Image 1: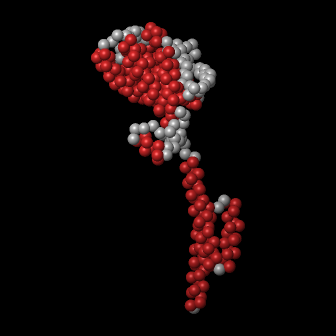
Image 2 (image 1 turned 45 degrees about the vertical axis):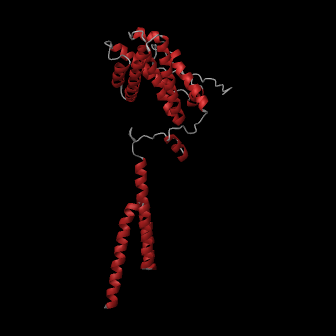
Amino acid sequence: MAALARALSCQTGVTQWIAGCSGLLQTAAVPGQCRPMLCSIFQRHKAGPFQLSKFCGGLFEANGAITQQSRSFYNTNKHLSAKDSLQPSEEKVGVFTRIIEAMGFTGPLKYSRWKIKVAALRMYTCCVEKTDFEEFFNRCQMPDTLNSWFLVAQLHVWMCLVRLKQEGRTGKYMCRYIVHCMWEDVEQRGKVMGINSTVLKEDLKRMVENFYAALFGYDEGILSDDHVLAAALWRNLFNRNCDDPRHLELLVEYVRKQVQHLDALSGEDLLLTGEVSWRPLVESNARSILKPLSPIYNDEGL
């Protein structure tokens, strides 16, 4: 009787193993492969319960791998939203460079600092020399003053800063020098115009505050829709004094096409030459993007 009871318990255990493995096969195996795998289970049952448990343990491990693969496959097929989109990898900076820059110094850059400074000065010159300020004053009904000139110039400087910030640490260093050149130019123009030194100092202080406020407003506008960009232009470029919505529409279209035009320029050429071309304020086909010509770089004497 005892031997019969042990045989029945062994048979019951084997039946449970087979039932568990059969249910496992429904999730792990392809429908056409169930019968051959079940036949192999019965063959291992004849070989002994130890090999059966070993086989089922391996099957459980295989099922775990399949489940894990299914999860990773599902995760890779998720639809990416705007927040989940891939971002460009940041520039790798060593510990020594971080320590130097934390102390207020500039670490090693991609190119020579003198080359970058020359390119920055040339880029600022393009902002003030290649821009038709008279057309801006006439079409936007702006007074011909130093402040109006500065508002138009800072708009073009901001667009250059937006483009250069995509070029890593070297581009950010070039941004700082462009802003430095701008303030020196504004101060010299004020002195040439005969503005009193005390008044000029107060005007420069006010311009600095307005400049950094305009940067935040323009950054928000370029990342948002045209309503936000138009509001930023109305506050900063027109000094809240624009009653004609067509002027705002013209400037919004101008900023959008210029930023798109600058994005088409090569980063290497910008860092080495600083040459920037501007599209006209009014165009018959403003949506078309003309491929800019690559400038010729000559580093002789640098």
